[in-house]
Length: 177
Ligand code: GNR
Ligand code: NI
Image (cartoon, rainbow, N blue to C red; front, side, top):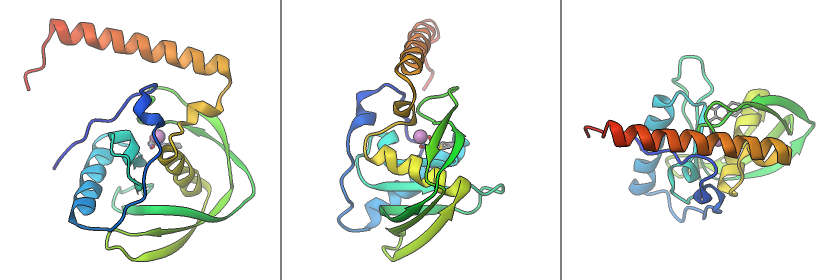
């Protein structure tokens, strides 16, 4: 198992645009495995490579209750979208922050799976929200960017305060490994 470090908002590396995967080879499959391990350990429903500082168009998602339905999306493209829905979103890169975001109700995407096969998928509700949230990460966008300037400023201040706190505690209690 390999756990990757998840970048925290407002890290500028979250604003980089990811490049398409040229070929789904063993190094990409190893990245998918490490991202899945990291997502499950962090109890997230999705993770984009951008969040672990790898700027390639790779996403893992698992919205199942049993956490046994891994969906891998490589180079995903939205080919159709319709309707609107609002839901409370959270992000592993912005811990503790949840807010309402507008998304398409239904999306049809085309992507490659972990064996390099091309497939289409129609998603609605929660899965559609998750796919749009993760695809935003690949474009260098975080859900916080949709909130008001005031909320963004508050979230930044809170994250910076948390960072200062963790820097202080790690100085007092240096990590053992
Ligand atoms: O774990 C996550 N939960 C979540 C809840 C509502 C909408 C989107 C998400 S994705 C998030 C994991 C994450 O940050 N993925 O980028
Ligand atoms: Ni996220």
